[in-house]
Length: 380
Image (cartoon, rainbow, N blue to C red; front, side):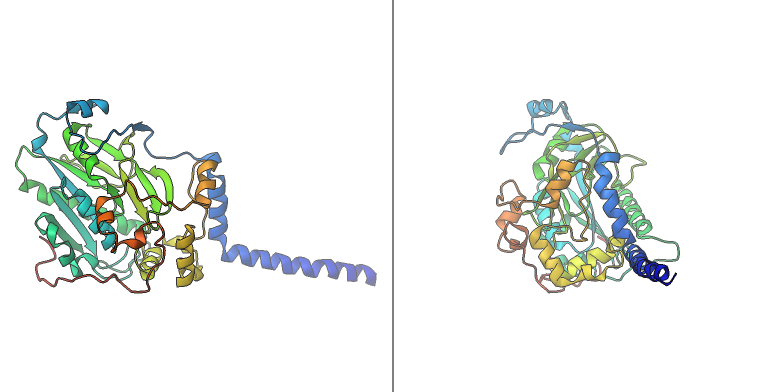
């Protein structure tokens, strides 16, 4: 009998310890486990939600936007193209470098830049008003800029970052509507709806202003992470251009099933400094990806992750085929800087961190930029 008890104890004690350790692991890392299973099996049970009808994009340097070019895309040339105005509507967090590259890329075709900025993150954390504090950096575009500050606040009970993000986009809708009366009655506004890191190419907007694409079209963008060194494919589709009409609203969702191929660049997590990565990881709508793992915010870990092109949350890529999944797990660094935003190349000395081979980041809190302190900066 004692032998049986001894054998039972020998078996039972390790089983209890192993079960306890397993329960602790599952409790502590349930978010990561759930997402690993979900992302690893996604190609089996899910399909991409973006537009399925992709229009081939024809472009050559110096190409005139005439009837022939419009016909190549299946469109007609606008007989009243001079009445169309291109408005770029941008929600700004801290990405001043990408904003400067974006505004230089689009300056020749955009008639007005609408910028909404808050003094808090989507998760309710206080933050600097980066654009307002550094407005002099964008002085060459000043006559085109309309700016609105959206006061932030700590999240209330039951409120999520998604609620705050939705309110911010509603604020942009109201901002756009309040300025539409400034244009002549014959004006036809084309509004770019994309996040600041989703940068359409200038020639794409020239094409869409010249040719009648309908009322809405999504833009397929080249997807990068951390810099233009790590190319992830053509899986960015949320950016869109829309003919603004009564009842229109500012959205980052699917608005139709048509998308123009290869229309620009999406540079996600393309920051100059390590603190900006920490602020992004803790302040945006997907902040729950940290899952309680504060070690993810370690500066040295973030730096190593950037230089290896790995996922900053240690998660599997969000891919809808195993070919894309495997390619994004181990991305190959790009050595080409061809077909990137022109201003990025012109100011390459300032933006080395965004180019191939420039993965080292700084520990500064913000990039060194000029500031402007004007009492009427809240809206103009």
